[in-house]
Length: 525
Image 1: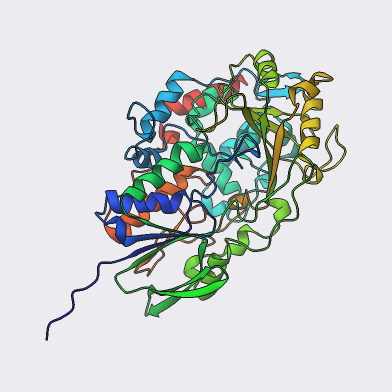
Image 2 (image 1 turned 180 degrees about the vertical axis):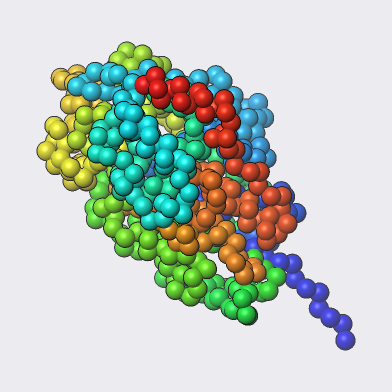
């Protein structure tokens, strides 16, 4: 009797964000898997997850947010080095990022605004603050389990210019994880000398969808990868044999119908757990964002965690949206009057300054004047900028209500008041399209955590599955970055399919020259 040949392994990826896309690239490039053996499932109608960019001149352009880059994101640039940018000149996506930053170097001349004017960026740290910073960075993570940032500093620290710049640059709140803040200080300590000018931070030529996601999707499509939109994995069958765990089936939801996807012993499943941008809701010029949806990308993680503790504790990260949300807004201008005004005001050519924080605004309002065009197909005569309110739960100073209750026009009114634009605002913002965007879980990955709350990329005993994204445990690296997701993908493919291991996290906090420069910066401030 002739034995039927064994079918090739199939690789299922739940979620269509950068973690899954990176895993698909690494499977093909590093593990020799054929594209036809890979399927990605995504609930939305396009891939990219939180790295988005959409819209047009008529409806207005939209970016919900953007992740920072810097040269030590070794896994991300390893990924992008294999991906053609699709732009003239034949550069890879990695090469294009570095070429753009050489051509348009960033150095902010207007990091902080107070009372409608450029303000001093001296750090304002006391000796006590410096002591507390040192204690935090030197602490064993076990001693910080479950601890919030505000347990590590006194109230005056949070009034310092240092904290205002740091918290708005990375979106930290005082109740967020002390472990994560300590990791951030160590991960980015080499950026301290240029911190007040945002030097050392890299930007993509266009929004991160156009500069990263679209080229990756094109590369994967050319290699036969299957993309399933309008389809999401909401549960899985976890089989246990002794201490070994394996996935034997996936529960797929598509068009309101449920389907079972069998998973054989030689197949592999990669789960992206949680989502920063789940349940996002949008407003308009004339309406604030509605109440957030309840249907969530977190359903899969919660269902898996109910089956085994190997998947961690998702409820730790989404206990109260009042502590994990903030609102962003994207503005499409139909004339360049505001662009010209900000160039004169800031002293920065558009796209070279980075984040501006209005430090005395009730919402802690921040905005970025992007290099133009910010979209690959952006219409001529349009200009796009973006902003957010880190503390939007309180009343504005010019619009007396919380940011979440404001229309897009009211957000512009508040911004105009903070910048003291006066009667000129009407002309600057004539016909501007504002797309407010409330993200109830945008900082969920920052919530205080303990050991075991996040699963390992490949949990103990896992035979054919891995966990990807912002909510798995990876020593020394930091969440809310593309690098964290890409590193998880590289680790998972290495462990399950034989791809190359990820390079280690660049530990500049162990470089005595870096430490000396950082100390000099803090003492000078």
